[in-house]
Length: 177
Image 1 (cartoon, helix red, strand yellow):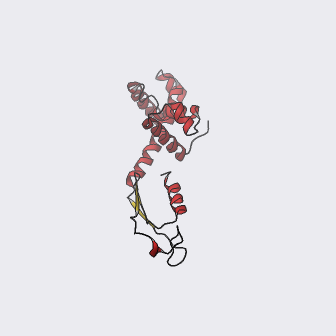
Image 2 (image 1 turned 60 degrees about the horizontal axis):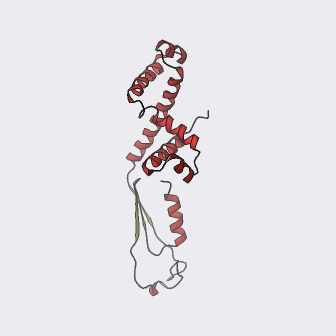
Image 3 (image 1 turned 180 degrees about the vertical axis):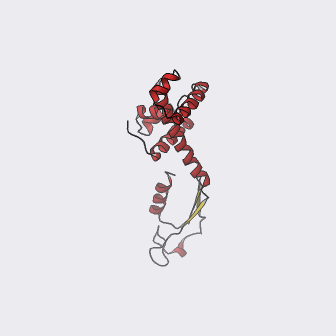
């Protein structure tokens, strides 16, 4: 099995949370976002690993896995001595690594201060609106700025006379935040 990068683990964590919060069935969610259902299910299992289905067993296995990691023993010997399946040690190790990655990303997001981005339109030529190419003085009234606050701590203010293609590009950049 290919080892996932930290970004991939974070991506799957967010997709799993998104599916959970969407109220959609797993199959429907995977079809809508063109996700491989088997991969999604496997990642969901690795990320939540027995935490929800067997909380008591999870805590015992988590403690045993940490003990094994600090013991220096081979997994098979440790598993035999503690009467557990060696596969569980590997699965819990993967899970704990994923949890550490997810916690790191969460902490990074919490530490980030709110950023303010001001986007100003540049007229095509002096006195012209970039959208209508008509003199700005002919606009009926000054409109309010568009202000977007993204939950990840980003605030974007867009002035009313910005080119529509620039707005589309800004939205495309922000949609993955």
